[in-house]
Length: 165
Image 1 (cartoon, rainbow, N blue to C red):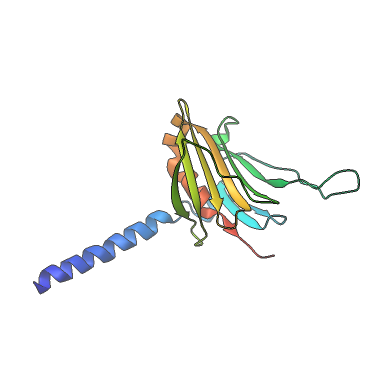
Image 2 (cartoon, rainbow, N blue to C red):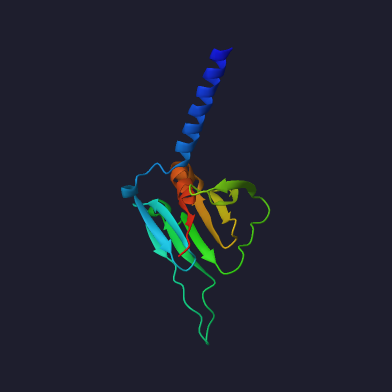
């Protein structure tokens, strides 16, 4: 009986190590690009070979209001049709509507949020809304691209970290 308990304990420890290592980014830092948003206070890491565009933000003036949101658009495999948008906004992010499956999601730094996913005819759409309600991500990629890059895409979401600057 003691032998079975020892084996069970070792199995559980091994499983925990496997799960924790599987949640970490499998790319080393030299294979990653990083973006730090000082307006909306977050950092995100993504594969260095993927193109990205920083969204322009502006301060409010007497003639126009400040930009309501901003962040980075990351093109999966540098394909402009397959996007990951990581952003912050002034005001709460709206929750997606019907048809989305909802689950809790945690980043590598322990940030909690809600993940909403939906598979449409030709594409996968995912929203990640962090608990603050002011930061999140939106993913819209072809089903083929998602299948090829699921681990990398989910690692981008896991890499999002809120900062206090």
